[in-house]
Image 1 (cartoon, one colour):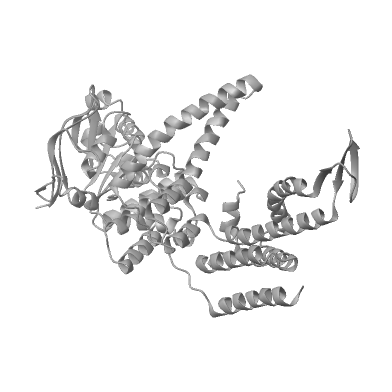
Image 2 (cartoon, one colour):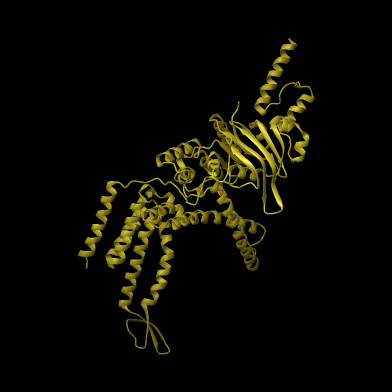
Length: 285
Length: 255
């Protein structure tokens, strides 16, 4: 059986009196899952992340980490095991050199100095930042800052990492780098939750999708199923991934059979079509 | 953007221990002021500038430009010492008006020259430090000197926020300029005022998101960073000792 890491029951949170940002969210996250969180702006994604990490205390509802309920005393344990990479790296970076910035988290965990140095160096190495460890963050480019903000969290070695819109404001090269990093982290056994507006990225990367709309979770399931239900897409103001549209057109015009599973990206589609044409040639012969 | 801060990051002397650089700079500064000796001032000025330009690799033009601003203040300040008003003419009379003479005395001139040189020499010693040591490392030195934690943390935050705020301000100004917000004096005043007000709101918001981000990383009231320590090499200590011996010899032997 898969291990349940994080569990939330009936989470409610409101900013001030009127606006309720989360209206009763139930969620179970298992170890090693790749989850994408979709929804339009203001749907409650960021609020959910802040609540799951313990920055915001829910008005109602309970959070469990490894079957242990999180109260006031355990909140640091939650923060230690669940890390957030914030959307805007500039809102996360506080120190004046890259090295001391990445050391901030491990230092807060009150680890011995040697351990901190080791963790910081390996986090920097995994993000390709070793050369710029003495640079101040304000002389880095946007992509480099993003990498610093990810290294910040890696150095704390959490089990679950929440990424708040990581692909926003990154160029294609950096998005590619980010995907590699995500794959590497999955290989290391980390559990990842990513909020994004990029449906193509979501479809390609994730196994499971959560869809938010107006503070409620309106869908939770395998990514293909979620994108296959028009009602959910319409309610959350989402569109279908391009590859799914293309795939459906190909099926409709008889190029591909309906039984085949929709490919995740252009490369998979290409190999699918290749296999298809090979088969067609064999039949001709 | 070219600032003293960016020069410090590009300096070739960054690898040297900040504590050592601070000690040499402070030593030279105190020697210079304490000795109050013309030749000491000249030696300190020349050596410290040479260290900054040669070892630090800062182009001479940029260094002189940096010296220009404080020099301007110094000259304006010493004018009062050099120029004297009197009812009788003495020294070099510049002009006289309504029975008063405006004169420049030789003694006043010498005092002013000494003063300017001393101040500039002290400044060059401090420039040696700040043009080779980023602010974060200077703060680290202060931390070793047991400056209260509160001030250290404030310095770290202020330093980081200077850049965050100037960045935000630059973007807002660009947005205003692109909408003709700085067209003439009146619109400039209005745009400046509203962008300053907006900056305040933005900084409050930023402070709260920063706080969230810090709390998310287990911040619990104490800003903890790890800084890498740089070792002082033996030749550096010997060089510094030789330097101060030479200064002492000049002080004792040169009248």
